[in-house]
Length: 421
Image 1 (cartoon, rainbow, N blue to C red):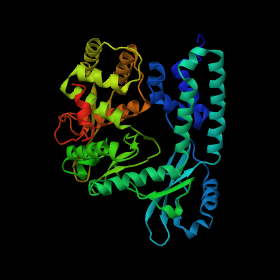
Image 2: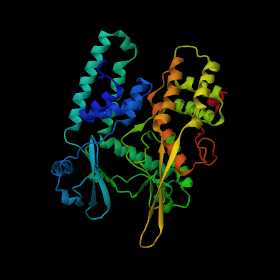
Image 3: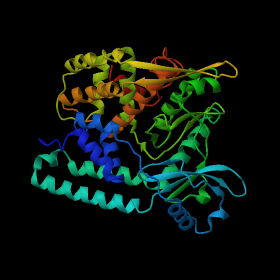
Image 4: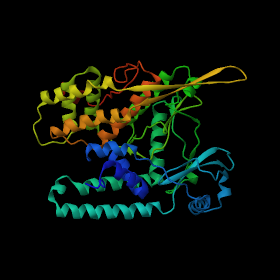
């Protein structure tokens, strides 16, 4: 510690250099403030998942092995330059033979699953030894945390599971009559396996690209409301929910629909937790801090009696700081010398550290009252913070939790919810 070797920043940089397992571990730490110290959660928000691309020859070898036939019998063309490259997979644009559909192929990098399993087994053994040497760690369920991490990471390297998540979301859109409002990429099952995932290529722009969005739709606010309603609706209608709605995964498509991309990271929420979450969100909007405290108590596991009034007062202090969050709009102008026309583009810069600090304050105060939240609560809150950023850019006058056009309350558990009041 004196050398700074365990400082949050040093560990984050070390994890980024150590490869896939540790990058994913860092991202897990960032999404689990109920399990790790606040300063580490804060620092690991900056853990970037980027990695050099694998040579195209190796990608071709994987495609041949997984398809079990020549590549050109399935794809008319595969772009040798990847669209994106992360620690566990890289993505190539392609065109299918016959249908001529434009697709993207997500390819698991060679040997990555073996590396993950070996590294995670090592981490598990270390956790068991530490629990044996220090019984205090057993009470913190260190081994249980490692098991959770292992399960979460291994799901990401099984593209059958990601394909199932996508299909479930598409079925939800179909069943709810939402296919004209939103979509997720179609999966081409005949050329998808555990290690390769072939999907429809969607064309659009991230929800933070205000200039492009304004050229595609007349009302960016309406598009944002659609995204919110579709996502909220999926929380109980689907077995899993999209748990990584950052700007790279949530697009406005050229046809005006909302595109949900990359279902590698998903969450699962129990009806009990969501019922309490609904009350929590409603109480933020109405500033009813006693209801908020009761909802958080219901969500958090505790064997202590909690002073609801004192807890409510502490929460009120935290949420009074929401209005102080700084959002800067960066506006750039460019003049076309031939037409003399001026183009204006804007992007939003939110102090993410402030946003995360607000969330961590809620966790910190709750834990001071003996509460421990399920990881699904942290995942939900993180997505809501993403949506808050989009709201500040696309619809600054919109109150996400009070606007009647946004439906965040389900019909389930209404009697149960009355018990909070």
